[in-house]
Length: 550
Image (tube, rainbow, N blue to C red; front, side, top):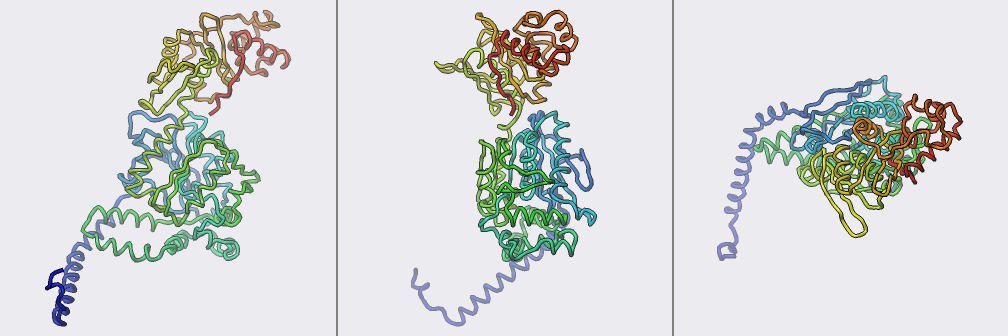
């Protein structure tokens, strides 16, 4: 510090300094104000939700959108985005550089999104059963049918995560993987403001609905903003004024404000059920929730689960989400916690850099595609006692990495096309065997012929998509086991002819047939048909069956 700086300033100097500061601040304000009108005009014309999509299904107010692909090929299991019943879902596609939808599309995923629309007063009686068991179930079935998949990926955000979790518990066979973003799932001493405000001892949602019909979206929006009034009503606007000259910042701010102001009403009955049962009674977490008379058993959620939570989420804090991991039935639960807030999980630059590529990769790892390779791998493992592994995260969208190892170490590893012929060719050439496939009601018989004979493994409960793929290729695949039906003890010419007329023409085919169908075709008892199937399996070396359900 210099001697000059240590000198006490005179009153005149202090006054002049203060005046100078005021003048500079005034000049800066005038300069910024000069661009204010232009920025207001720019803000009024911003676009939101620009990723191209088409409506593929409509029901009441609901619209199901499918987004146009951004890659030449797409992964085989689609993702259905389920947003909350309040606000508009385009927060997931607000602008190209901060669009969850685009991040998933860029990774090669086939993406659908539910836009619930806004309920009218006539919809006030719609409850959780309507949204879960009718609207969501119908949308899931549409996506399943369009994709040819038995099960699809479900991705719920906020209240949409709660609805998705309920659906997955009721229909686990239709959900390949479940991702939950800032989902409201557990409410007992979590510290959330909504839990405090919505407590049964201070709040009766039924009284509000009786007076208003539906819960007004504007009322909900004011309540959410009031959770942090300084930030929502003062600080952010001061920050905006400081950056008025930054055109990109102003446009981004305007898009966010457009979404915040675009609230929708919530169906009255759903609001009451959600507040009373999910919030006040914690019924979903306690496994005591019922929907339409059906128990919502969260232990039935046995598919892979991904929880994505914001460390600074005041609306749905992590403690309102992550304890759910301990009550689901899945053994494959992943949690991503990131230092941001409720909306920041979808909107911040940091999450689009750090979180969403990881989420896209997680979905990739849950693909159903490797099931075909796994079916063949089961047959190889059963016949030769070696390990065959598959990995779809290596290579391109339509490729799979196959590794073969025995007790002495790795035998071979290669990335091959995800095609029944390519997979068979690699395994046959590497192991010097012949592989055959036979399709039946009970599953797929994988026959492996070596110098020592033929051994068959029956892989049961295989999904429809894999069955279709095998069925298309079956004409070009040689079945290793070569027996006549009459070779099965108890099947004479008459029974054999009846079975052939029904499409059961080989012993391997008999081994993977349903006993009731065999009995009906042969006009024999079910017990006799079961005996034939067991004998057929023994003849082709099918010493055991494995469950191929994913």
